[in-house]
Each structure stands twice: as structure tokens, then as C-alpha cells.
Length: 284
Image (cartoon, rainbow, N blue to C red; front, side, top):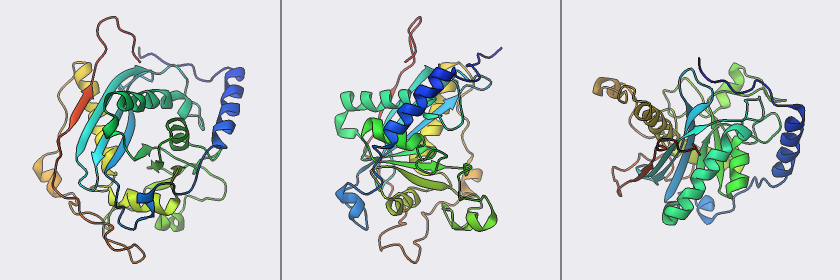
């Protein structure tokens, strides 16, 4: 039987989470703070990160926390860190960050210590930022704790006051490319404006999911399979790839020149840091 975390935290823990969330929320910066963000072509942006937490099937405790860094605008992986972790905090809607963010903060800290020259200038986070019931989602939480500019990219719309999940709203959501039928919900995490968050996310899309998040997800799932001795990674066949759009998103009428360009085929060489805990070692 798969291990299960407690269904709901004790009331004192929940109260603590609420207080900490409120304190951290007050530190969110929802404007551009970097020079590259103010440049229409994002000149000066060279490294974009993505983070992901993938679960072992049928197990709500064991997971893989991954951090990847991609070159920009080439969108080639230059750094990878995947670790198996044990989630001890229970899942509670609106407080996902307390369950997952500590492991992502650890990954950022390892990168700063081991390869400081590869620290991303912005992080894309699989989840919400200020588009959140408490206005403080996982992208905000990670941004405040690491100090890095962060963007929330969610696949589903959370129930937020003033927003309705209807066809009119979906027409205004971000679509990765002109053929996409499933929108993405981009929101400010930390140290970035919404306008820049949307444009940068759009420019990072080769497929529906922005490449930093897509690579973090692929590599974390592959790492789980390798760590648990399962079958090798499932790769798309060339025929499947051929049916998927390859070009970058078209530039919209209000986007400045240079945006939505197709990624260049260039790889500066990747550095991987995927480590499985040794026998008897405590998972971090």
C-alpha cells in the first residue's frame, strides 16, 4: 500500500502556515526589477530556469524535485538537478507551497553553491503566482524565499474571486501557439510584471508547455523511473513529433519586434547533477 501523508494538518500547523503565508505575501514585488525585463527583446537574459515536483505513481509521499536551467533564447538545457524526496507536509488546497517549495529552495541553494555562474535569471514555476485564492501561490512563495524573479504557469484555472472559468475567459488566456486548444494561466510570482511574464512564457514555448517546465517534468519523471528500476524513459516517436508544431509562437500585434522568435539550434553543453540517495541515506 502506498504511503499516505496526513489528510489535513493539525489546526496549530494550519494557523502557522496562514501567518507565514501572510508575512511572505507582504514581500512580493509585482514589478520588473531587472534591466533585461525592460528590453523589448529581453537583451541580457541568458538563463531561464524551470522547476517541477513529480510523484511516484500511487504514492503521495515519494517524489522527485527537479530544477533545470536553459540557455536563452536557444532553450537548451545547461544544468539539471533531480533528487528523490519524501514529502512530509500534507496537501491542503491553497497551501501547496508548504508541501513542495522547501525541496525547490534546496535545489536553488545547491546550484548557487556548486555552479553560481548557472543560476537562472528567472524561474518558471509549475503552478500559480498571485492568481491564487490567497493571492500567494507557489511561484510567489518560491520567489520570495530564493529572491529570484519567478513566473507562475498553471494548466488549470483556480477558483479565484472575480474570475469565471468560461469560454470568454479562456479566449483571453495565453495559448502557446496558434493551434493550441488548451490555454495556460500565467501570473506574477515575484520581481516581474504580468506583461513581461506573459511575453517571456510565450517566447519559451516550443510545444504547449514552456520548455523550462517541459524539460523539468520530463527529466524528473525519467529520474523516478531510473531510481526505482522501472522501464526506460518513454520517448515520442518521430511520427508523433512530426504532428506537433515545431516553430515558435507567432508574434502578436501588440508584441514588440523580436518576440516570438523560433529558438536557435545551439547547445552550450549541459551540466547534470542528478543524484540518487545511497543506501540508508536520508532523502533531502
